Image (cartoon, rainbow, N blue to C red; front, top):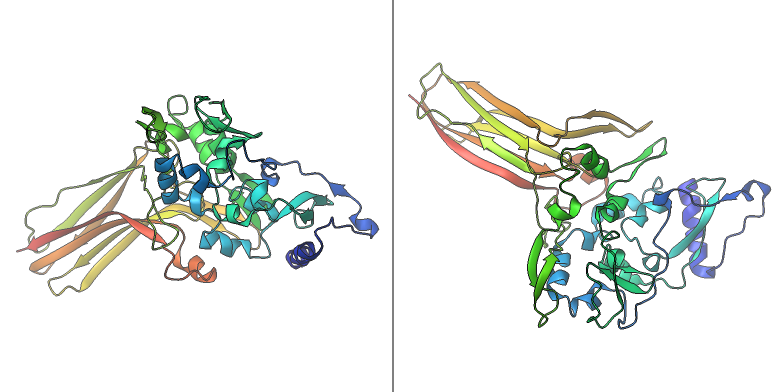
Length: 397
């Protein structure tokens, strides 16, 4: 009922654009927002020299940055079909949008407080500065680079046509972690579990590498055409590599080192085919997978005979298991720690001559098929990408 109640309030807000006032005494206790994840980046004015806060506006000069950003999942943080499906659920509270459209300018309503501290009873008003086009850009340039009527950059150059200030501390990994480390038990049946920041802090690289050094690789290039090369960073924000739409591409950063074992040139009847696949979290400073607890890897072996018939298959999984109802809790977690390695073994006794094919595949998954069907995600929503895919010919004499 609370979810329905909130939707009714939203409909009222569209029509009136005024504060909601509850006359019954039980609604008089309106508490302020206290948790960081309940709050949005306050209204940002357009800096002098710019016409809007849109990424497209920035891309008029910062052309390469803009093209890279369009490949990123940041650019589809709001339009992501999975996120939109989750948002429509009654159990979805208002603050889920604060990481996906972090600027108040992008949000249709302003949350003033919570009735009795209840996240499902926010006191809201219509946002007079709501920019629907800006909303569609999700996490855009202004999300990270615009504060207090200025563009925040690494150099604070005075050559830019807009006001620019230098603040490398603000543009540090702490800005990334403000969204990529959202951990909270929101309600008995709803938890936010994005622990990448904590994983990095507890890992072996916290003093040497950070989010930016890995996910925004340094490069020498022109920031603006015609102004010469200088140090910059790629803005693909390479990550899972699973695109949000099948018509798009994105940049992958696996984190894994995958090492297959050797097979014999020939086997005899009664021999066992033995194969090992070593998988190591060799390149990531956090667990793999990380972020959304529904992500996982599948390691599958499929053995076929010379008629191309599957005679044996086996599968392993790397990821978390959660129970979401009646009370949310993590059941298991076998994510790979930084530098952790694990072996996935295949064994099969062959008692018939012929040629066999062993397919070895590692795939990275956004969520499982059952969850995708529950959320009514279509075939146009990519659920996985291949990470390793090899087929080996095996001769049995």
